[in-house]
Amino acid sequence: MLAQPPITEILTDNYRFLQQHVYAQAGIVIENDKHYLFESRLTPIVRQLGLGSINDLCALLRATREPDVGRQVVEAMTTNETYFFRDPAHYEVIRTRLLPRLREERRDTKKLRFWSAASSTGQEAYSLAMLLIEEGMSDWNIQILGTDYSSPIVERARSGAYQQIEVNRGLPAALLVKYFRRAGVHWQLSDKVRSMVRFETIDLRKSMRALGPFDLVFCRNVLIYFDGGTKQNIFREIHGTLFRGAWLLLGGAETAFGAEEWFDREAVGNSTVYIAR
Image (cartoon, rainbow, N blue to C red):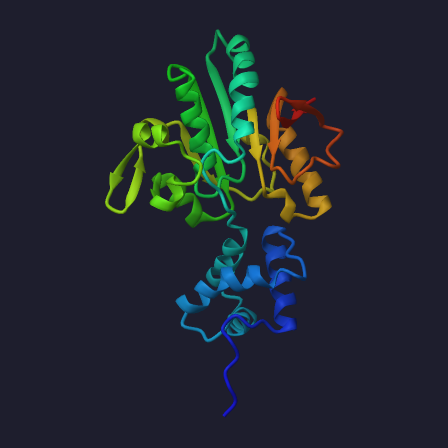
């Protein structure tokens, strides 16, 4: 009897099929040397469906074009790592440079709007909310929008419930004590913080201009997964959601190459900021 192939083994044709499927549905480019991404992220789906391997999953998708399974695959591949106060220099430059300016410019309306464009499970958006409270802006009309491609991930973000390992990453102990409470095996974020943030499902390839205008957009560690043309379209759409002079912050390994028409690149403190023209 022939031995069964490992659950994670992916035939070449199936690898190409998965690449094409994810690109067609979400615009995400998975390079040829990223087998481990498919292996690590699709194996739970294989087990959940009671299949024998990722190749069996591909056969199911090819045979039925089952939309729910197809979306599960795409959502698994678009879920990005996140943690509280990731890239601390960004939060510091917001605190020391952006907020003082906005306090002065909006002293009459006391209204500010922010967008976490690839919010994943919500830590980025909630970090910003806690920062604003800590800076004494609880009496301002603060609106923070968090968006992600994955509906289950958005639901997780809305819950504001985090595992111990998640609150251990980046979250100062003082803020954990101040804004969270134990709820069984989870830490539950306070209603005060959660009420400042609204989460929605969105595809960044679609028109986003109706979402704005915003004073700041985080779009960190997601653009690296798109091809050049898609990135340029996303930059254009993000620009259309921003006030003139508003900030765009990218991930540490990302640049706004191709977005010079809409943004000026400036070094502010220890961070690179893209300022809307």
